[in-house]
Length: 248
Image 1 (cartoon, helix red, strand yellow):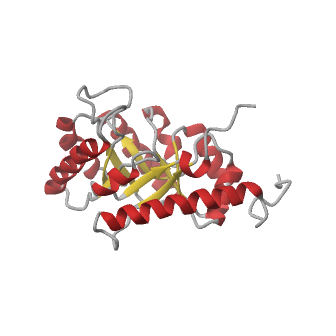
Image 2 (cartoon, rainbow, N blue to C red; image 1 turned 60 degrees about the vertical axis):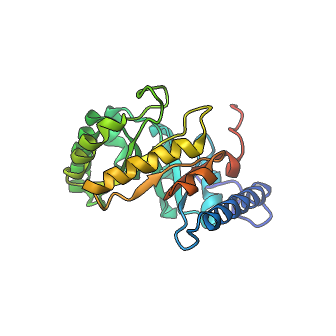
């Protein structure tokens, strides 16, 4: 089904709005990266497009965005199929049920929310089948770590003590790549302290898995703190795309 209008036309109002928002976020990232003393090692920007229409993702691609994030499998799989011509890398950033692994491996470049052995096993089984079927590249996996005092809170994540075993499981699974760690700063917490804790967990992980250098941290409200802590991947949504569209 063809689009009724060209969403990438230079005079498209929504494109102009997203372009300005994206430029502002890129300036924030550049300023924070410079302040952190890492101007030659900027983090990768993942634009989180959950709840926003596929047309917005097409606009982002026209503006040079290559990595997008989603947190619901049904929405992500539909968008990835509709936008397969864009060559985007899709990052799954939400909590994932094990029974969705078979679907997610069909489109995801990376999973940022592996937090339990059952999910790791399901992904390993599903990626093996998918690689045999399509020859796709390995799936990057970030271990989601809980930074709350009580691991397993509503934000999800493995406890610090669970990380080593989960890392070994991922690293030992053909078709999966242990990419690093991911976390969300707890609500109401000091993001510098939270991401500092994540950096410590990352440093411990690197002792046994030196290639797992990824730190997925930082959203619209705390990207500067994440960059100070060494984040390699930022997950930015609302500051680029605005608030969640009203349901129709």
